[in-house]
Length: 297
Image 1 (cartoon, rainbow, N blue to C red):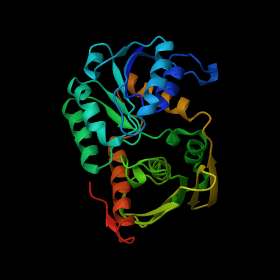
Image 2 (image 1 turned 90 degrees about the vertical axis):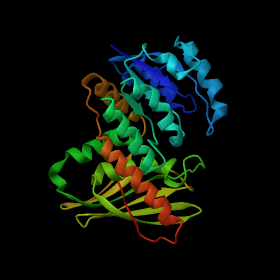
Image 3 (image 1 turned 120 degrees about the horizontal axis):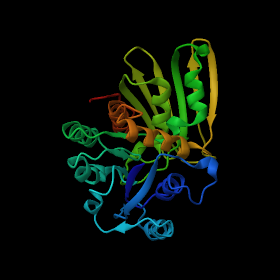
């Protein structure tokens, strides 16, 4: 049984993850086996500090001990869930655990700059500690089924869509646009070399140009009914695939726990590094009249 710690309480994922892993407050078809959340630290937040007391009380009701400092969890856990909604603090949050060679799953957004993403990946490699990150949308059954069905042939392009809610701490696409970027990269794979982006009050539209000539777009909306999905353009036809959210936490957690058991991440962190660079490039392009911006890793 993998012993897990949780750091930072400003996201509902703290409760959603703990309840599924610890088999409490959830129907049994949402349970995930193989681990237990045994300790947690509330941390602080510049994104949603008002949520911390509510989620703290919830975890206390679940019987999960709460400690004052992140370092107090070292020696008591096999792996960590880094849950701050603020991607800019993840280097700081992961450092004590990676230094202690404790593997980490870092919730979205992994980082708000390519430099920060590299710093975490490099430290993890130096300390031989696994690190990875993913939006739960990557493992939604609809997208998993589409990618497993080889009848459509190679995918030539994609339009992924989702909410584009913003926050100053996670600028531009880094807040909720990270989900749409994850959908895009799940369908397209890595290999994007430049991005052009149109930014308007109600929408961000980022188009990536892949090295092999393929083109794909992430549309992040800030108005109207907000849903997730994608349209894929493949050799044997076009498919529109809406994505539901009913089981996405369960499916993500299966991958997270399996990664801690096997020591192998469900997603290569270098793919996540490129996604961070994609969003960073999109933000720069959107702020500069849609000028093309090269992805630099």
